[in-house]
Amino acid sequence: MKTKVYLYRHPNYDDSTIIDNLNYIFNDTKVLDNLNENSKVFVKLNLLGPFEPSQACTTHPVILDLVLSILTKRISPENIIVGDNPAIRDQLVVLKKTKLLDVIKKYGVKILNQTDYLVITCNNPNKFKEFEVSKEIVQNDLIINLPKVKTHSLAYITCAEKNFFGLIYGLNKSAWHTRAPNPNEFGQAINDLFSAFLDSRNGKPILSIADGILGLEGEGPGAGGIPKNGEILLASLDPVSLDRVAVEVMGLDYKRSFINTIANERKIGNGELNDIEIVGKEIKDFDDIKFLAPKDSLSNVGLRILRIKALKGFLLEHPKINKDKCIRCGECTRICPQKTMVIKKGKYPSLKVRNCIRCWCCAEVCPQNAISKSKRPLIGRIVLK
Ligand code: SF4
Ligand code: SF4
Image (cartoon, rainbow, N blue to C red; front, side, top):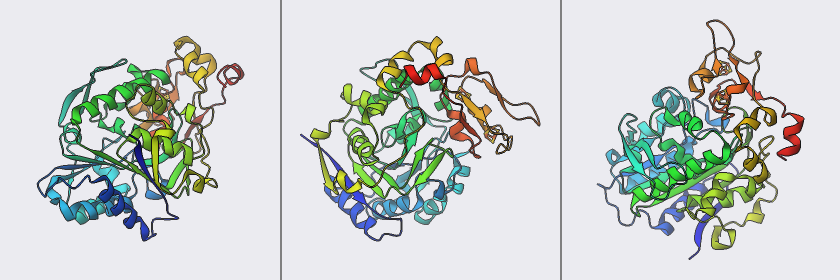
């Protein structure tokens, strides 16, 4: 049976038809049909860090508002939990800056308890079997996943499936980059996690609603990306199908979206366009929308070559600090899983390139967009193309 992806075009967040399309999605997927006011719902945000909504790095408050307006008609607010495990700092700080806290207060719903976790198991792992994840994200009757449509320096795009990396509780996410230090291993690890998560659901639904009305292009997913009027709204019960359609409407190259291609190869979801029914608009209705790809994304050949760790230093670009933008806050050093980015009191951060695994967590969390990619060495540009 084909999986369904809902695809709509909205010029901005003031468009009064967004709510009509969201109501249609909820009705057509029937995700609320068997729930009552005592059922538990988790709303998974994308809380990358303390960014303004106009920076397009985090779930937009209008989307959360509209989704909660639908949910609270059926479910009691105290049974709706909203949140994510942001890469840095306190969840509350991030919720305030992103203007999502105002929406949470408006509806009186709860915020994720970030210290309560459990272990989920992947039955058919490629590399990793067990994951410590936030309990409240797993134990509920329905998940509404609210990712942004963004390009990503490491993963090429980040949308519905990658948003579940935020299942990893507390600030433990960056450590996974050290456990899975090359892009292919990282893609497998994300899919092990997602597969374990699906197993833990026992068929309870996950509805992803991805917002690229204002998306992010270039060196995302943080402040290094450029907000893009993508005008895209997608939804699906299969995050892998949703991401497959997202890549197409973004005008990008599916083969480079390796987390998604791995999910499709491992049959964790359906990434075959021929097996997806698109409801609403058609892909060709977005022919005029082209997202800028991240610089120096990796081909399949590149991904294979980079399995050889020793080659990274010769072939890949590395983080570069722009001292004109840096405010010496130290966020990049706190997130660095290799502890290779360091800062001395009153100085700018510095980096030992040979220990860097190019996870780009430092660039993701930098509030100033002060970390960019150095130029890829000539040999890397030839070999990894
Ligand atoms: S590079 Fe960015 S994150 Fe690092 S210290 Fe400077 S401003 Fe802070
Ligand atoms: S310096 Fe940046 S890219 Fe390199 S390992 Fe640390 S966080 Fe990752």
